[in-house]
Image 1 (spheres, rainbow, N blue to C red):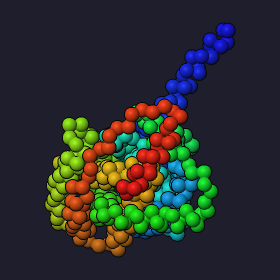
Image 2 (image 1 turned 135 degrees about the horizontal axis):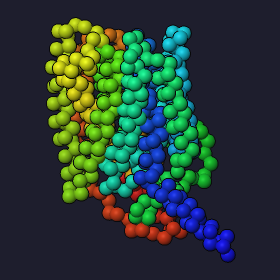
Image 3 (image 1 turned 120 degrees about the horizontal axis):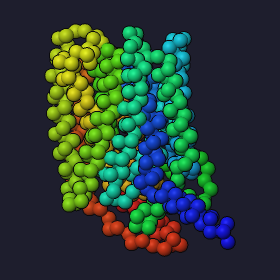
Image 4 (image 1 turned 180 degrees about the vertical axis):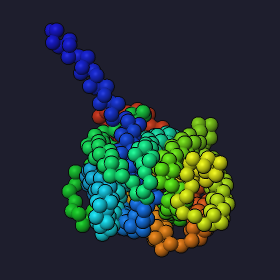
Length: 473
């Protein structure tokens, strides 16, 4: 009797942990921590300018290879694997590629083997497509419709905390450095954190085990029908065609293309070309902290309870439009000033009077990145309610996002003048906002919340809901 009584509290605790683990917000927090460790640390390295190397051309070419591989695989390779194996397997496939890339940069510090860096960049591009499609599907499909803005905000805060902490680590390790490259210890710290993130992928729950507040599951269980790889690929190409047939998604492609376009200009031509190494590390940390602030701001703005979803779509659009033109207008003034100075890697935070203006510009560049990408994810979440549909849209998003980033990094590697790069960025952002107007105006009200159902009826409920969503998309 005593043994049985003693086991009850432990069993109750295990049940509570399991139930908490199955909630959408717990899973979003977990995927956020994974992205904190893997792409978050990658962002910290990239934010140093030239990935911490004196010659930024090698990093730029590696990034081109990365983004080209992502563009090719996010659409053709990842969705069939996601459909058959689920998010956990996709995360495990993609996660190990991040420490490989950091290891290649560490190797380059000693051997100057640029081919290894570029090849690891291409491998990381394939791995990143697996990770980001799984992440996007979890973030936009697991929560209830009126909780998606908060879910996006939670992810953006935790994910960018990785870039911020990673950059602070680099700032501390390189505070007294006079060289143009980061230390071996910096890359070693990044590799260790990335490996932790990869291990955490084992704890991701599939959608059919995640229970929302209304009692519904996040998605249906895996299909028991066995399909070959070739048939799955053919089916995904049909899904891709269906995505392009949806004019709402088609009009968002310019916004997807711009989502990573400005990184090359901001990280290499602004941060990498203007500031000293330790100041670049500080700027990189604050850039990602600005993303946390920006993600919180727009996430809660898009979940305002007293506005309908169509009105929230318009509110988000106006917010992104106004902040974008104000921030990039400040960027134009900075670039004209920088061109007159004509120096390279000269500005240190110790010169506070000169430093403060460019610092705040770079901070708001980071905030605007969060505004833009969070709004894109929110629009996709409003158009796709199931994990399978979300994976399809996120794959499309990542394909064009990576294609745009590859073009931008190639422009940067070809050493186009910074003012030219700024002009291209601003023009593309303005055009993308113009194309997105019909999609924003077509956003429909949130669907009626489903009443909680007994556990035994959940599978049938989710199947009906998924089929209705497929008909509308």
